[in-house]
Length: 285
Ligand code: MN
Image (cartoon, rainbow, N blue to C red; front, top):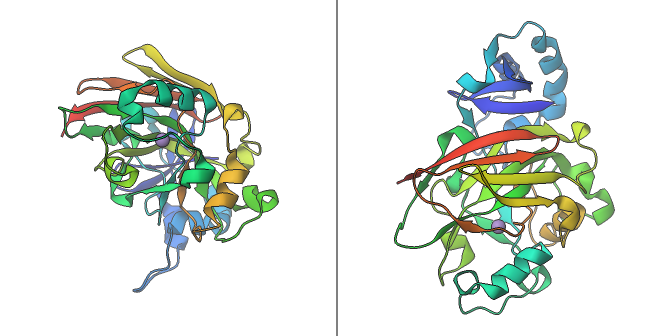
């Protein structure tokens, strides 16, 4: 199932070039009082919502996909986790490019650990990216994205995929410079998740998912998750050695090679096998 959030927080089920408005399923969500539990309530309750979604699908209002405004399919992640340099070819280009390398010694995930992007940086495909600090280099990083479905900490690699709600694509937009990752990568709109969430039952094996980015029609990034240094189960397990993972938490699994600058006016098109296509426009903030 492909689940999207669209327009003014409607819940949709994507079917080809159509979106079925299944927002009525949200009525089944538990009512909440402060303090609300961490995580995203749609993702937390996905199993419970599933039969309601199936019931609604047949009679749900149908809209054209092209006419809806796609928001991040996860509304309330407790964390956006990033994996630094997780493709061998991207490590090579980072070492070769002084803008990427800065004054750092390029090390591995085992040396650096993972990093966090502010949840306030998250937008959906149709919201686009508003670049700041135009006198500096702002790069695209298209990444395969994992959305956690079940809470856990110290999760074994062998159990890790049981903790996944689904998959999506993410942009880990990056301002280049000497500051810490969580500062440069957390600018408003510098995290994009979309175009929707593909539930894990539809993508049981994330180990060879091909994805591609074009900017203004030119291919910039093209890779498969089979080239990940640390694969999806290993990243989930490793993240949970420090963090408790909550439903809706997003793991951006790292950028393949081809990282390059974007400017206001550029249009990025990301495509991934089994997920779909999303168009993200770049503007000046
Ligand atoms: Mn990245």
